Amino acid sequence: MSAPTATTWRNWAGNVRADAVAVGYPASAAEVAAAVTGAVAAGRAVKAVGSGHSFTSAAATDGVRLELGRLSGVIAADADAGTVTVRAGTTLRQLNAALAALGLALPNLGDIDAQTIAGALATGTHGTGAAYGCLSTFVEALELVTADGAILRCSATEHPDVFAAARVGVGAVGVVTEVTLRCVPAFILRARERPTALADVLAGLDEWVGANDHFEFYWFPYTERTQTKVNNRVPTSDAPLPGWRRWFDDDLLANRVFAGMCRLGRALPGTVPAINAMSARALSPREYTASSHEVFVTARRVRFVEMEYGIPRAALPEAFAALRRVIDRLPYRVVFPVEVRFTAADDIWLSHGYGRDNAYLAIHQYVGMPYEEYFREFEQVCAPLGGRPHWGKMHFRDAATLRTAYPRFDDFLAVRDRLDPGRVFANSYTGRVFGT
Image (cartoon, rainbow, N blue to C red):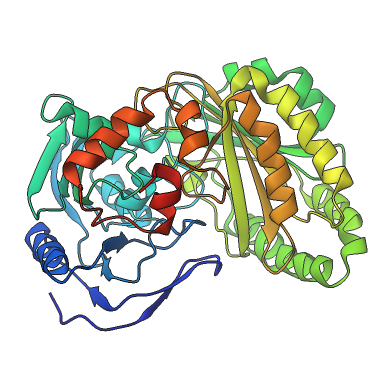
């Protein structure tokens, strides 16, 4: 491992900055363990960072920062068993390419592939689909370095309590160094994307969600319009998207033109309702087929801040109606669309979907525009409905209120107390959400 140096770290959105006293670039679990024991001897905290796509300060530290870019790549693959073991710093983009070369794929993905696999799992990253939980439900085993420098392997049969805690561990129980994932044979998706009236989406929501492998929609504030996205598995790719259309929709409109509209809305807030109406009208229907990861993932180059809440699926109509009222009474405008997705229940202690089918409401605001009142009022809508904030998105909850949202919260804390009694992996964020 190279000699540590003092540098400044910022997350992707630019809302979090941290100045570590030392930075390490480990290339193996043994080097991570050495860095942890060295930090403990010096009385310093340790945090591992991935791609910085969390909007919280979960990875920030003024102690020792471990950057995992060298800890990447596939270690082993068993195509017959459908399992692949990868190092923790492997990005989802790298992982998707490696799996495709093996004829494999993850069963589901979110819409961004810049995150490291360890970071995505730690925060409960998810996609959409009534039959699919978050990405952590695909984990077969984990290897992590604990506060005493031990390299611990866990699974459903080996240290099962650690496994239940570490699959969505928010970086609080150790530094994950290796992940074994359960994959599926590579598959093709048929994507259907089209503008749809909001009333039609809400009236037929059960059918939209239940009749498709993957369904989500985007609502444009101050309008009655949405963009629906439906993805279903098909045997062959018989309708690839022309290159010019992908560039026009996903590069020009969704990034360059949208960025310009956001800048206009930030400079002239009164134009935002017209901008949102224009954005909704600019989207035209399209249908195409492609490999699963090419359909799931889209480019996201316009910077924003985000809050996302998982709520019981039955509570979505109430939460959505309240969100509309929140937006209407804000003293400023909201230029970004609201994203709505759906996931299946799981048994992971800190998963947003623990024990229930979830609907997710994700709200965003363009960088440099006011957001705190918007986010706080939305949180006040979701919390009484059993809402659970995404661990990688902005929220204002603390340990006292999160304990009521997660039935196994104290079980997680017991594992944390055992593996990290000295709070080597703690920071201000974990102190707030888990207590000190």
